[in-house]
Image 1 (cartoon, rainbow, N blue to C red):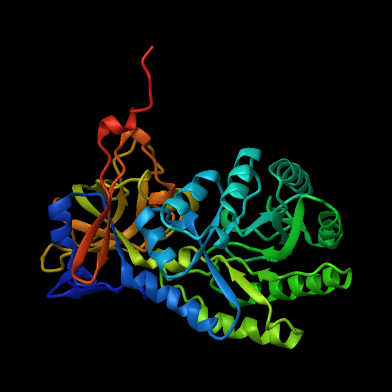
Image 2 (tube, rainbow, N blue to C red):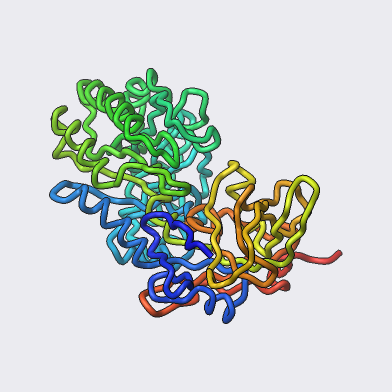
Length: 425
């Protein structure tokens, strides 16, 4: 069997025709712990972080991991110990970050629909900044902060009307998106915020989307944001930090996004030229830190030939890996053992859920049979964090690999866990 190509930055390799993650044999891991099974590489996460740190060397900066990508406690703990802050979008994420050891002062709270209760909890924790997304939110946060007895630190999220050239569901910087304050209204909004007694303006924020593989939208958005900084500070409102968001893509299918360090060389050239190179910079990477660090191991249950399609039915499903169903997203799918002599055939890799949308990969050439283990690649981001118990399926176990050591960081659900908070009449 031909050895498949693997994405960059994964710490995956075939050794004696067996797929390993760092030094751990994935077939053996699946045999020991069952499938579906998510496995992550600690080294891959820290390597991805190191690229950002290299790009920021010698600058005032704070990397705030966008934890919606993967919010498992051990993953958060890893980034907290590495000095990261966190970008959160809910009260639950605030509680998770703090439970994992986050420094509250390094937490920024994004999202368009913060509740009063969430604002109160964030003020109580002493977070670093609220990224405010509307004038209505400004008013509510001002009221909550006055009741709390503190001035809430804020930045306004700018909608720069820049096309991130990504899937429309994960594009956030166009004027038709729900996110941020329209570019033409930002200066007036800052003037209003500066007059609110419960608010303290500390920065400006921009985030244009996710899985971006071209540097030009970043650079365009940076130009538009720096124009606004000029105008805002000309009105006497000082900005302590500039937050450029996240969204840098990863290699799913031969994608070639710029490396984090190369991107930031270009951005700092622009910042230096505009006189902002010494300003504190915040960023909110998520997928680019964890996406290629993870694989989902799944067992082939049946091979089902059909008139128009051949199907490879596996035990992982859309509840475990929602991205293909939600975004028509591509994930590489490879066998963990390439020693067999089964002939390859073109198949759709599908799960057992009662939905035609339950597919993990279409038109894949795979040399597999029932009982084989497949690895669905680049599943460290937006898999477990978006997963569910649909069809009353138990959510998988998660393992974090550190060299030769696999550490269980989440036990597999028990079926009775699913109804633990339900009540019969």
